[in-house]
Image: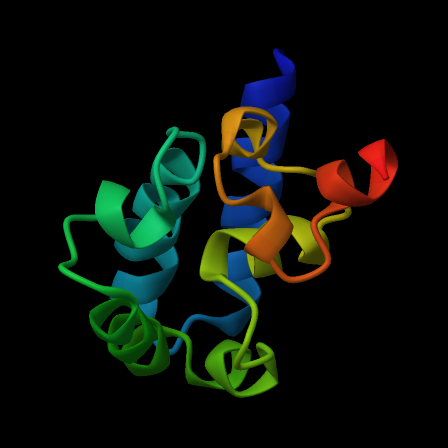
Length: 109
């Protein structure tokens, strides 16, 4: 199993713990986990216009998780922090200095 496959599985399993129903657990969680490996912001890779739409979507399908996510932390960052990993896209992100406690930015400081 590759490192990306391991991370995808960990994100999926993490999301499943907070899923509100079977659709969120078996359809949406795997989709979000797969998209989290892509190189844009998660809301973009899921086809949302902005982070507000992403937040509403997550609140609808993972309400308890949405409640514990810090308001100033991006969803992808929050999910990967939750499993103790750094998202693949973070290495090439142009917004590291603005990301909430970016591990890559901290390491290079």
